[in-house]
Length: 122
Image (cartoon, rainbow, N blue to C red; front, side, top):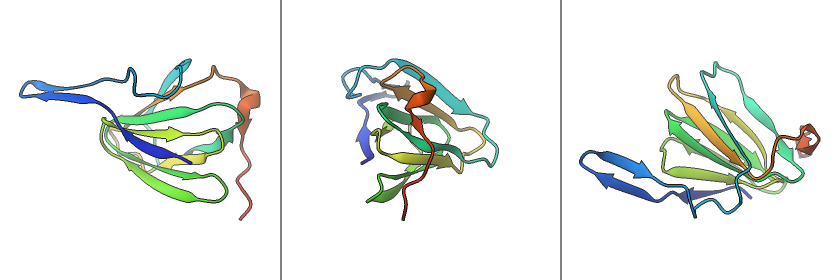
């Protein structure tokens, strides 16, 4: 099931620095970010193989996740908060603030065959 991890952050009077190395529990093969989102719902899928780490590096958004047994909603509103999504986590992303930038790190390269769009049966 999806889970939050806190990223190591160094804070000083002159600003903050957040590091990702040794925090993400998989090798990163793909990096993308989502921004300037209107009122659309993004995602709406799960994967066969891909693990993901989502970090809202600016602004905020909400991520809903379910593995077919448990469902949870996460408010992503800090750049040192990281949501780990496992392949079985069907997820959707919504409620993006106008300044939101959602950075996503993935364990696999893009492969359309890895996507499962059907929601779990309730």
